[in-house]
Image 1 (cartoon, rainbow, N blue to C red):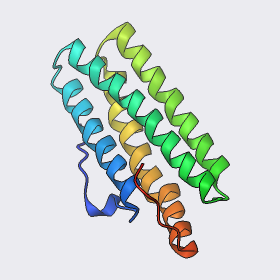
Image 2 (image 1 turned 90 degrees about the vertical axis):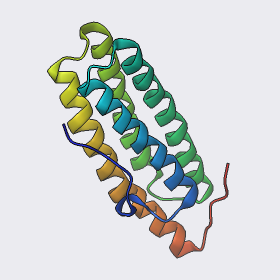
Image 3 (image 1 turned 180 degrees about the vertical axis):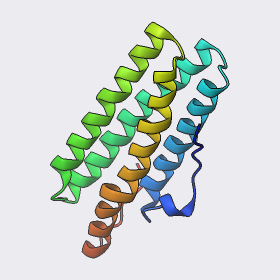
Length: 141
């Protein structure tokens, strides 16, 4: 199973968003380890639930900042966030129904990790560039 850890390549240079991304990466790594090591249903469900709740918080936060900054890519970002949330919910539901099957492990490993890394290095980095170009500094929430 692939490992994910925060490193500077995932930084978009916007502190409030980077801090949230660090938490997502940490918890995704925790989830991958829990599933890989078959650490018990309660731990995995707890981590999946946290991921779902935290991504909702993070996406709402990003979208709020984008709206306040009048970011033209907001609607695309919202669609990306919705896609991720729906897929994460399917993974949670599948895990609750079937346990740590190979499909769940691969979903966590491939989809969640790849999506998060690609999203951060793609559309989130574009938002950071927009903020920088406009001279906008986000405040802590």
